[in-house]
Image (cartoon, rainbow, N blue to C red):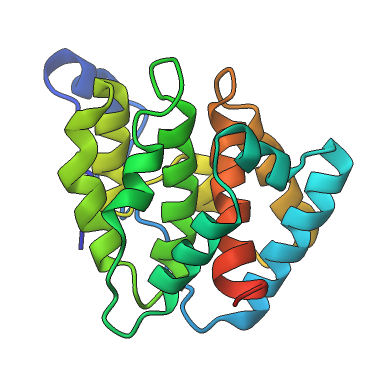
Length: 203
């Protein structure tokens, strides 16, 4: 189990202990939802209604980043291959793609990685490749990839795992897209892409 421990030291810890803070370990990994069709269908429904309300268009976003039907089909073949063999070219298309401290392509891969981490039985090689390629992008994205490999994601994604309520899901999606200049929206696109093409509009 990957855990993160908050242990303040010295004077800071002493001051916090006055307020009875507990310094126990907390597991911050996303929950395993493999086989939980009620949750996955609820999340996909919330993503669809949220995208309509926000006027988001996944296909236009993918086309803007030069990703079209052949690449989508290759992605699906990666998802459903018995060997779990992921295409390195798929990740190379996205790693470091775009501008900023965390380029759009990196944020997209993290959103997609969240879906695969919580729902897919066939994601190990995806994260191994992500780990291998993390030095091809910015230091901030490298840190973000390290977290994703460990199952650690931004708080709105973590919270999505802990509710089946549609209104709460949409609230957390709203919190997600507010992250950064466009990082949250790019993560949302990865989340949407993974749900749509890996689980609900397959083959």
